[in-house]
Image (tube, rainbow, N blue to C red; front, side, top):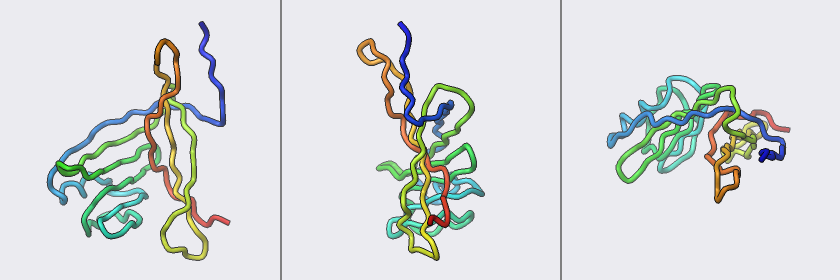
Length: 145
């Protein structure tokens, strides 16, 4: 039997997701974030852009991208967990990119948050179907007209 794939504007890649840390100490959770990149940091009282070296406030979650890799940090009941999602050439996953309007106060023009949403083929009752894997932040789109 031949696999049938319907293309709906999707692109293909390989995606490696790796857990990179776990801690109960907030100062260690901040250190999971890269020293450079762009991203979104969610604090208990605010949402802001990632600024390297700034670790003020109660960290709830963060997504910071550096090209084809995104570092994710999430608060959990046991502390904080960190992962890295790295995209490479390949065809084990498909993705679509979507842009979302940022909720940050507008400067001269609004910005958008760009995310990639990933799926992988898995067998389900003898039929290969696309199952969602998750999403990663890929950067800001500035000066949207």
